[in-house]
Amino acid sequence: MKDKILLSLKLLLVILFVVVGSIISVRLWSGKGEKLAKPAELIIKSNMTIAEIGKANDIENIVLKKAFGLQTKEELKRNFSEFSLTQEEAISRINKFMALQAEDASKNWMKIVIKFGLWVAFLIFMFVMVKKKKVKTTNRKWFYFIAVMIFGVILSADPSPMGTIKDNFTLFGAYHVLFPPRLVALALMLLMVILANKFICSWGCQLGTLQDLIFRINKDNKGKPVVPQIKIPFIITNTIRIIFFIIFAAIALIWAFDIIEPVDLFKIFKPATLGIIGIIFAAIIFSLSLVVYRPWCHLFCPFGLIGWIAEKISLNNIKVDYDKCIACGTCIKKCPSTVMEAIIKHKKTIPDCFSCASCIESCPVDAISFNSGKRANPPKEILEKLGEKG
Ligand code: SF4
Ligand code: SF4
Image (cartoon, rainbow, N blue to C red):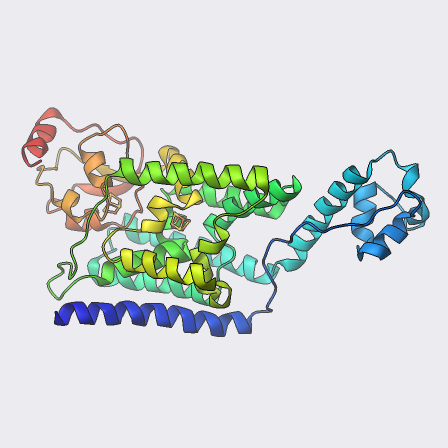
């Protein structure tokens, strides 16, 4: 009972720390919206000049020039009827360029550059630590804490791995445009997944590391979970994640509506934007994180799903040396998810591996490593021994 009360206090403390820290940090940054603009209702009449359209709708000249393909300021005096465009076509084009302009203006570019720079530096550091087998129970929580602090509390909710997918879909659904910097960010994140097995999720994502930290605080002095932790079969979590992704993508592309927005947990790093549904959902997911490993990542995150697919061609990942392995099954027990079991039992579907190195740390004969190259198939004897152990 005492342990459970202590655990609840620890959880509250972590969340409180994140929320209060984020409120302070959001105030210190420029306060730019970092939000997608909504399509505007525009007034266009056939006898208006382009400049008059701009004035009536409060549109910047740069947007008008791009929308109507104008080269000079003089051309803004041309009449709308001179362009072979219907009103709907003109509104759609103006909205497109207004959205791109608003995207550009809403971003805090300095923060984005700093965040990507720090992501690269921190992930390289963690890559070396995992490869050298230096990530242990004693320091793992601290690395998650540092990641939450830097990439979440200090550098806030945007950008995030999930945002690169979510906002690309939403923007495309609303305006049929893609914001090039967002595509570049997505490409960079996927590159990180391909280079080092989802390292951006493992050690860089502010929300992923927060859930991991919460999962790891659910331990008593002997390293046993205070509240029993469960591993939901991957077939269940991934099916939910795929269905959620399809529904999200369809609604975003067809009706230009973002169903993730009200339950976007990255907003914990911008607490004022959470809303009542967000607060309830956050309470559920963060409490669940104590007993289930990274529930948001496994059940809902669009980047989690895309990253899981990209992970299949990752250049570095967890490998087992079957010449050393004694099939004791310790790594399976210590893996917070079902992935180690799938790897060592050579299952067809390998769930997301978050490169946490718990398996590496647990192996009594040092048979597990994080390396490049192809994964070896387990020999029959190993499979038989593990089969006996269930
Ligand atoms: S899967 Fe998890 S860690 Fe990866 S982007 Fe989504 S929330 Fe972050
Ligand atoms: S297999 Fe499991 S324990 Fe090993 S790194 Fe991946 S998630 Fe962690």
